[in-house]
Image (cartoon, rainbow, N blue to C red):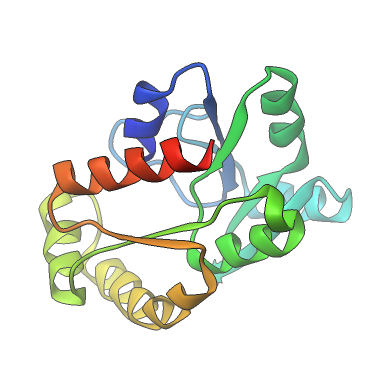
Length: 169
């Protein structure tokens, strides 16, 4: 969905690249999908107040949004896209208020999510189960978002997202 927005509206949106302490998956590249850093560097950046929001998602696994990413993107004259988990989305909505539009993208079911994660082939089975359990809890928080898009059929989800963007901008 994020890639779709970036290609459909290339002069409007830019992705905020998050920091994480997890290892890259597949073809991921430092500075493109994420800034892959050590837990120690992450904690140092927290201490220097470099994050607008951050959290420890799992034991020893941190994710966060750098303030410098927002400045960089706004300096380019673009709207910032945050691709974050539910807690991060709720936190960012609280921080930015009406300046932000929060969109909850959800699978048609938890079983469908599990099948999609398995199909990617880049995640260990125990991590898939952790992610599925977390997603089950996150589904309860979708009420805190401005809009909900169910990603059942990708083309329909794209069309719904495009309509939402055209009506919002």
